[in-house]
Amino acid sequence: MSTEQQVVQEWQPKNNPWLIIMPVMLATFMYALDETVANVALPHIAGSYSVSNQESIWVLTSYLMASSIVIPMVDFFCKFMGRKNFFMFGVFIFTLASFLCGISNSIGMIVVSRAMQGFGGGCLMPMAQAITMESFKGEARNKAMAVFGLVVVVAPILGPVMGGYITENWSWPYIFFINVPFGFLCIALAKQFLEDPPYASKQKNVHLDKWGFLWLCIWLIPLQIVFDKGNDADWFNAPWICWLSAVAAIGCIAFFITQVKGKNTLIKLDVLKDANFFCGTSMLILLNGVLLASLAILPQLLQNMLGYDAFTSGLAIMPRGVGAFTALAIFGGLGSRLSYKTYGIIGLFCMGLGGWILSELNLEISMMNIVIPNMIFGVGLVFTMMPITTLSCITLRNEQMTNASGFQNLLKTIGGAIGTSLVATMISRFSQVHQNGLVKSLHDTNNVYAERLSSYASSFVHQAGDMMNATYMAGKMLYNQLVQQSTLCAYMTTFKVFALACFILIPFMFILKSERKAKVN
Image (cartoon, rainbow, N blue to C red):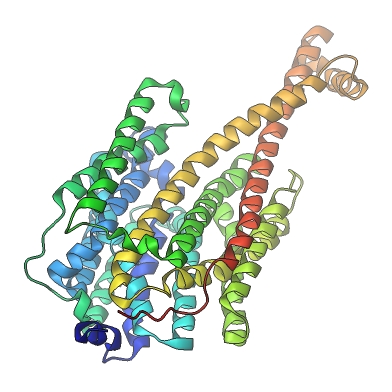
C-alpha cells in the first residue's frame, strides 16, 4: 500500500463523530422530508395560481429532476470547493430556495424555485451517507448508519402528515418557510464540526466533465417527463412519448460511454466492479421504488376509496414511522448479536408481510386495519434499508465513498421515479382487468345480480316515476359499485406485487459479503 493511500485509510476526524453527524442528519431529514411534504398541498397550490392539478405536478417533478442531475456531480464539486464548503453551499441554496418557494407569486416562479431547491438538496444525501460511513468504525458505524437509515425512511413518511397539518392549520407556504431556520442552524453546525478528509478537500486543476453533464441532462430530463406524463398520454401510444423515450435512451447510452472512456468523469464506474455495491445498489433501486410507490398510492386509496381527508390519510401512514422507531430500538438492543444479513432478511420479510396484509383490505375496514400493516412495513424498512446501504459500501475504500454514494443515490432516485410512475399505470391497467372480469357477472341469469337489481329498482321507483327509469338507475348504481370494486381490487393487486418484490429479494441477501475486504496493492 502506498504512503498516500495509507494516509487516506488512516484519516480520522478530530471532532466527536456524533457531533459531526448532527448537521448531516438535519440536512438529510430536510431534503428527504421535502420529497413528499408538498404532495398533499398540490390542490391548494394549484388553486392559489389558478392552474390545473396536472400543471401543479411540476412542483414535484422539478424538485426530483434537479436532484437527479446534481447527484452525480457531488464528487466534482467536493474536489472543486472542498466537501465542507460544498455541503454548506448546498444547504444555503436549499434554504434560500425554500424561502423563494414560500413567497412565489406564480406557478413558474415556484417551479423554478423548487428546481433550485432540488439542486441544493440533491447533493446533501450522498455527502451525508459518505460522511457517516467515514466518521465511524466498527460497531459505532452500525449504530450511526441505523440512525441515517431511520432518517431516510421516516422523513418521507412524515412529509404528508406535516404537509397536511401545516396546510390545513396555517397555509401551504409555511411548508417551505419552516426550512429556513433549520437551514441556517444546519449551516452553523456544519461550519463548527465538519472537516475535509484528504480525498474530499479542495483541489487544484479540477475539470468538469462537460460532455458527461450534457448527456446526463439529455438523459434525465426527458426521462422524468416521460415518467410524469406517460400514464396520462397512454404511454407509447403517444408519438411524443416515443420520441422523448428515444432521446432519453440515446442520452443514457452516450452518458455511460463518456463515463467509461473519459478521464475526468462525473462518475467513476469502477465501483460497479465491487459485488457488494452492485448487488446492494440494485436491491436499493427496487426497494426505493416500492417505498415511494406505496407512499403515492396509499393516500389515494384512503382519500378516494374510504373518504379520508388529506391530514387523516397522512396520519394513517404515520405508524410506518412508529414501526421504524421500534426497529431502531430493537437494533440498538440486539446490536451485533445478529448479522446484517439476518436483519436484512427479517426486514424484507416484514415489508413483504405488510404489503400482503394491505392487499387483503376492503371498504369496510377500520383505521387499525391500516395501522398494523404500516407498522410492520415500517419495521421492515429500517431492518432492510440500513443493512443493505451499509453492506453495499462496506467493501469500498474511503476515497470511493463520496463518488459511490452519489452514484447510488442517483440510481435510487431514478428507481423511485420509475416506481411512482409505474404504479399509476398498474392501478389503471389492473382496474381494467378486474372490471372486465367482474362485468361478466352483470347479466340476468345471475340470480344475485337479478335480486340486487330488483331490490334497488324497487327503492328508486318513487324517485324515478316508473319501473323502467328505476331499473336504469339501479343498473347504473350497480355498475358504479362494480367500478369501485374493480378499482379496489387494482390497489390490492398492486400491494401484492410490492409484497412479492420484497420476498423475491430475500435470496439476494446471501450474495452480500459481511466483512470488509482487505485491499492490498
